[in-house]
Image 1 (cartoon, one colour):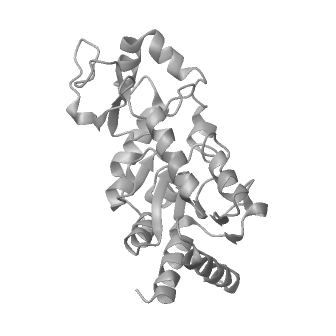
Image 2 (cartoon, one colour):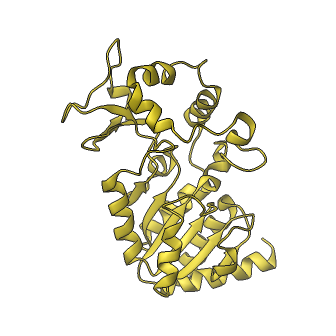
Length: 262
């Protein structure tokens, strides 16, 4: 590891060790080393295939049956099929495992991920919010119950919630769809407790997650960025680890083990 990165890891480790409630905000960069494509950027899925309609949720509500037919068709949406295949093949990478390691050390109190690939959960993260949902699950839009996708039987009828008979959709938050109320409330609770936030592989530009670092900063908390590219928060971060999540996050976990003797 380059000397500059080693110095930043040491500085970040000391700040994290001195903090009382560390929360990680994770983005697509965490899963790049797992083979899951990012959405934006030069090679992003939406850059190549086009961004979904900003009215996707309204389209679902207008005709849920048509939406389900398209959702189940591999030919109807190549972007969805490509992402689904990538997620099916993907396994957690060193960044996911390092976050679990930090959690088990008692250093990381909670992880808020914007990713929908389920890899944090697969790696073993226990204190976790998947704020944009999980593509392997379905969700009731009424009571917000969630369950594994394979447990939903879809035939010639619309799937309904087994708990409240509400309308069911994929758990992934669509464009135009608000983050579920209960999920957003949990995010806000964790952010309010945080005096140190790790920004791991996220550009921190998508609302409402973009507000979380600002809330921590406004209360005098610490921001530590892990990202190979500059973001809108780089100049405001207390420490920047300019490396991929798969490199910098494990390095930070190792340094904290040394500092804490664990």
